[in-house]
Image (cartoon, rainbow, N blue to C red; front, side, top):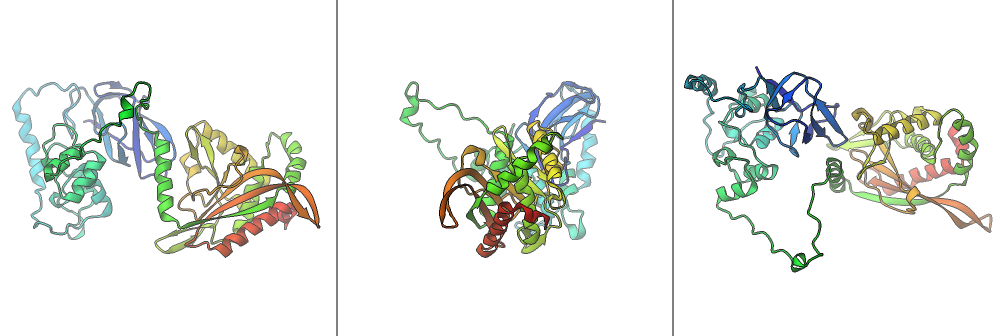
Length: 447
């Protein structure tokens, strides 16, 4: 019997993954331990190994497709073995037609329910999602849940003839327009144009190419698909932009005392193999301030505010063409040395592509530093479901007034973007003021 290959669940918060690349193709021999495919999540990309020997009989989802965890995405078995969802790779022609009737009783065992047109179909949210992804008409699926509710296993077990592969856009459009993609009769994958044709609508004509495109030497490069990481960042940022009514508050801070503190500690810590940076000091300071402002170290969902027990401090780390945000757990309980060690370890793992999914989930607050790039003010976007993010800017020698005299001090802007649903201007201002007090008087960390 063929072995199912499932979309893995790599972490508690992972619900779906995108197949980035198949390392094997249909018909290839596979051994346990071979890299079968790579999967991209919203956090990282991992290679997935085969856990059995055999032949890759059937690939159910292609590269670039996003699939729910625990969904069957391929089959591995003996050469020529028949599998669900299509003919096996390199399968020989059947020796006798008697094999066909054996499938009939299974299909007949679960007759399609008789429902009136437009009748409401009770179904769980996940079942609706699966049916939409698979291109199934929900009203045709028998429900085995309470009072005939369609549940996920009903969708997984449902067979409506050969499975029709449907692009995400086509599936969404079909669901909105009430088109049964299984009835379209497409030999390959159902696309947007197929759904439009079924409704009698014409696909929009492709816009005429601009005249400049025909001029030699003026053509743009061919469009290329962005990386899964960049796609994930784009989706997360768009979600944050539409979720949080945000306001950015900027406050200048005298960084002189922080610089002196680092200067006195860095040499002794360096002898112990610890590299102390300004980010480590900021993480320690901000963690202490967050314990005094629990509403900021929180998350909001369904009109319920959750105060997090610990400060899990995220630090944005550049990797390739995007940013990854690992977080140091329980930052408020740790010493400066522990914060420095854990942060540098996470940064190294992130840049080497070895960071664990658990290290990138559960964050409660994020620090993003653009100071090394000369930025003196910016508006960072909140890392959902957090309620605020602190932008750290460049340290610049600036003339300021101290005791009635103009002196040169090293000043640094801190830019706090906060979700105004919870964090109003007064709270944000007090929080920034407290951070400034701790940075300008580091001995207060001992209080």
